[in-house]
Length: 332
Image (cartoon, rainbow, N blue to C red):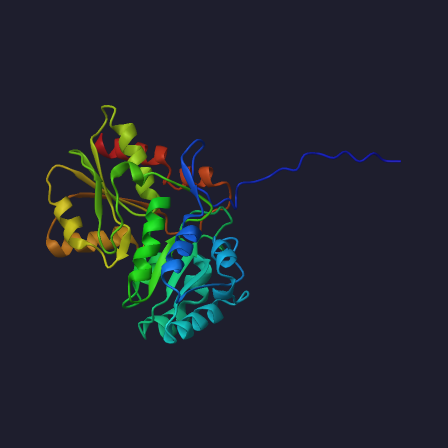
């Protein structure tokens, strides 16, 4: 008779969406809780998803308002079409799914059903950029590039839990379609230390510095702040300009910050180097005839590997240590 030995099951962090480091302060499900709070004030808010309530934190809303929660099944085109119909009836639909499914699979429905008619739909999409290790099928590395091309669509890329929480209220108050990159689960909390207040369409200078200006969005603002602290030990004085709204872009604030001479300007984003914040900023600077020394930190124009997030962030240059290394090299 053979003996069966129960070995411990090996696990992988490939699908873990949290980008919090060990010991970092976090807030659980800021999107879900913020939506519940906003729904208490706005009875026309409804929550909709394509079989992903638990994985977009919409289940918190569903538990609080079961009659206002709509499960559309694995049919993202139907989700967007139905959200458009809800908006036409006076509701404010918050439609959640993964960013790859919202932008790639349902693009035509967002373009034609929602955006062309300027309907009041809020698309909140989890796993943006490189926030999952499941490979190209789940890594929405080009979502902003796709969405930037849709006329009239507002695009929001929050940095942390506070940004997400405040953005929910702001986009609910905004009349028109919105695409928001969604941070889910245990989300880092960093911006409360910088007297921060989200304003739709506004970039915010979180810290000033004479040597380097990092213009960033999403989780890269958190990385930029961490890098600034590391480099502040004699290596470089780093300013961080957070751009939570990608479209419409706060070109006035960005251009004015880049007029200051003698600073290296770096755009850092958790997105492909094609079609995202970096190219939007570069275009704005060219139009304004402002020409600082310019660098870009972004994901490469390629299909990315699968694996554990810390390893992938190092490999593709968006970890804090990679950011610090790149800045030191450029300043040398």
